[in-house]
Amino acid sequence: MTATTVAAGWLIGMASVLALVSFFEVAEQNRRHTQTVEEVERLMADGVRVLQELNAEVAPDCASASLDTMRAMVFASPYVRDIGVLDAQLRLICTTTSGKIDPPVGYTPGVSLLGTDGVVREMWVDTPLIVRNGRVSASVVRHGSFNVVIDPYATDRVYQRGASLFWARLDSDAYELVSNFKALSDTRRDAMRALVGRADVTSMLLPAQGMWALSNTAGSGAIWVQSFVSIEEVIRQRADTLALWATVLAIIAALVFMPLLQRLRYLHSVPGRIEKLLVPGNVVCLFQPIVDLRSREVAGCEVLMRLRDGDTLLTPDKFMAAVVEKRLTWVLDRAVLQQAMQDLATLGTAARPLKVALNLFPENVRFEALHKLVQSVPQLAERNWQIGFEVTEQNYSPEVLTEVAALKQAGYPVSVDDFGTGYSNLGSVRNFAPDVLKIDRSFVMDIQDAAVRSTLVPEIVGIARAVGADVVAEGVELPEQAQRLNELGVRFAQGYLFAKPLVLEAWRGWLKERSMLLK
Image (cartoon, rainbow, N blue to C red):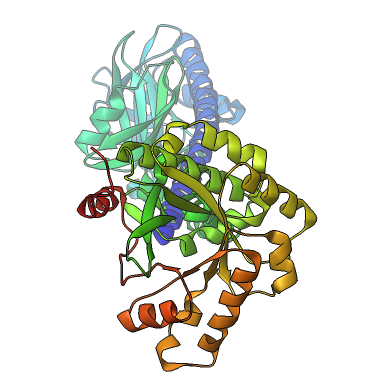
């Protein structure tokens, strides 16, 4: 997922760079087109001026006086380099460069060009001249019995600016293609033709033959020039720029996207969502029976929990560190207590009083908050469910001892969980005055073999008797363990020997089998 997202981000970035490069390419086309149109207009204006003077002042013949007058006009013109005279059949009979031509050069129709002055003139673009056996080409404009040759060096500058198509206006609505510099296909040429004469469209993305290209159009009243550059050409022409940006984006991805993705991954992880998960509806309570070792009757249960995350049930080791780190211990304890009481309320009335022990973080041993929560479901006490609390063995502060005393006085049984794994002594336990000491499972595992650790069980039993507390052994899995614990004076036990932690319906069934629920 991370690699895919980074790759997608990189591709989006490259697409944005390509769009930006294309934008600058269109801007460059606009600049070149503007220059082209302006220069063509200058060339055409000079040619039209000379033609107007020729038709008004010079006889259309090849006499020496006429040729000298025409040569003077060429000399005075910035762009006209030759003038030709045509006979009645529009054959070229002489020029200022070659003099009289015998035989005359036959007429080949050109493109009709409607000028801004409303006069139609004929034009040939990049046509071979008679000089140097046709090895020189230039643009030629004709009106009446004269034509003028435009400076080929000036027109070359126009062509070299990269325009693809050159259109001339035939009348107010029609344009004719004068030159197809890039030899565009008919499909592309026709698509471009639709833009000619439209002042409202200067550039666009044009799909042609399955390929996207940049189309750009600019023009004046008489002529229009267009460019057609495929995206492939843009990439090829701007390869260095794109390669540089590809490297830059890769670095950005490493510096920006990766930390961002790590943040997103965290936000989707259990620690990132733990606060939203800690609601009663996501808490799954598990009830593990506590059994009297002498009578084998149920005395109550301990409430364990799992956290629902979609279709997954998370064990405490998967989220507890995040709960502590984010100081959400009260949020968790409150959600578990609320859900447990809601579950118990659905069971109805127990046949006799059963103690229900819920685990608390030490900092959450607060009488007023806990009492208020329990009192929100008053029917539990009426139905023989006696809520109590377990706290882990620790060096108890005076504040905790005060809160414990208030809980005990209000009738809430208080247990010390995992007793024997901390640093409690008889004095600290006497100050705490618990109702129950729970022996950690590590003391029970090898009790039948009289392992060193298990020999401390009688000491724990002695401490419990000294403070008037009951003893519950955790993790009892074998009959031999239960028998030995009973012999050592341990009254109650819980573990897989009696039942594993049960979900609500399984707990209901377990109690019904033992006739512990009243109808």
